[in-house]
Length: 74
Ligand SMILES: [Zn+2]
Image (tube, rainbow, N blue to C red):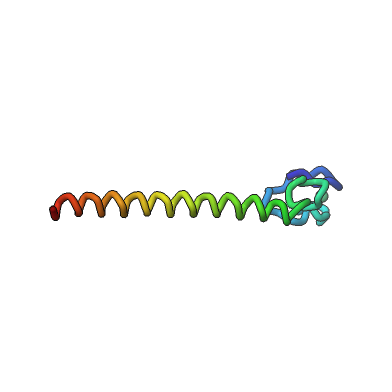
């Protein structure tokens, strides 16, 4: 990302400009991290929905295996 002070291009992982040492991760400069609470909430929702879909998938597999075993045993 570009330093707002001197214009030097820095890697996104950098917090301070490698040229002038200015802080790169300001709310205005990134637009991201300006509202950490909302970002964390979105991240959490994404993770929860991922976990839910995984749980549903596991349950479906267990039911399918159970049904398969049930028909085999009978
Ligand atoms: Zn700079």
